[in-house]
View 1: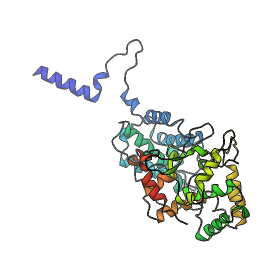
View 2: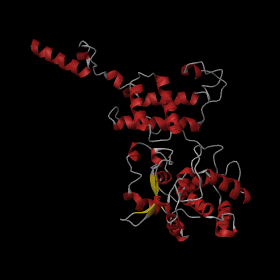
View 3: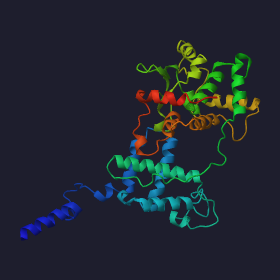
Amino acid sequence: MDNSKEILSYNKKAIDGSLWDNIPHNNGATTHNHKLEYSLSHVIGKYLSETKGTIKPSSYKDKKACLDYITELLGKDYPITKLDGAKARYVKECLIKTPKNRGKLAATKHLTLTKQLNITGLDRFSVATVNKYITYFIALIDWAKNNSYVDKNPFVGMKLNYTKHGKREVFNQRDLNLIFTELDKGKDGLANDDMKYWSTLIFLYTGARRNEIASLTPHDIIQDPASKIWYFNITDEGETKQLKSKAAKRLVPVHSALIERGFLDYVTKVKRMKGKDLRLLYSLTYEDRSGWGRKLTRWFSNNLLEKLEIKSKAKSLHSTRHTVITKLRAARVDNHDVRVIVGHEPDGVTEAIYNHQSTEHLPALKEAIEKLTY
């Protein structure tokens, strides 16, 4: 009986970890520290170390700053396993109460976060900012779940519902008619060279970001041997290519409207040209600060939109992206497919495992993008 009690006691200690509490350190040897391994600071550090190098330095810095918030709020030694629904709601409530520019304001910059939350009369985080933080928390916990730290993600579904104020507006039908009429004038219109003409069409038929399009080479336009579908290979491979996030690396089918306008002949023409770092939009030049896209912004926003009397504070080159997203959703394209086409971050762990670079999904994405009509 005594032996049975000793065995049960030993098993209990082995399970709860107390068995190892009395084992002496020998000659400075390191022992496994379960508490440290599951601390927020340790898990975040591991996650960021895998993230670094896969996104732009500015995006990495932004992500790290947001993740630092949760360790500042809960403590760097807080166990990630204790992040449940109640604690996630608490984090969300604190975000809502957090003063804007808290690290710069004289009233808040010398205070701890918990004290900053109690100061009244200050502007608080915007809804967009709160949702940005929650997006980063979702991504962190998804990673932790995939790496067997936790079983579920309590931040999923925590984002605030809102309508952006001051966001870029979409182009209405009158705007689009003016743009396409100008494009159809060819050499006699404002879009009187290849860069102006094709960049405008690619923006409107992909919803891609400025530097994603600007950094394309003619060899990034590829035909899938199996499906025969032509697609844009949007990638960060190459010295002068950078993408906003991992999700931005993707395959986007070429819309039939582009093909009908002679896009594939144009691609062949550029492939035959000679020149160092030749881009698909071959007249673009590279700058360290703005990449390949500066000329596109100046042409589209300051020339085309201005002369067509479309330009406003809310309408610019980036409005093409919002227009594509809005039209795809209006055409009842699945939100998941919309996110893949435009390179948005996945919504949760299920979408995170979807391979944006697999040609297997091209037929479904081709069907989706063909619903984009003007």
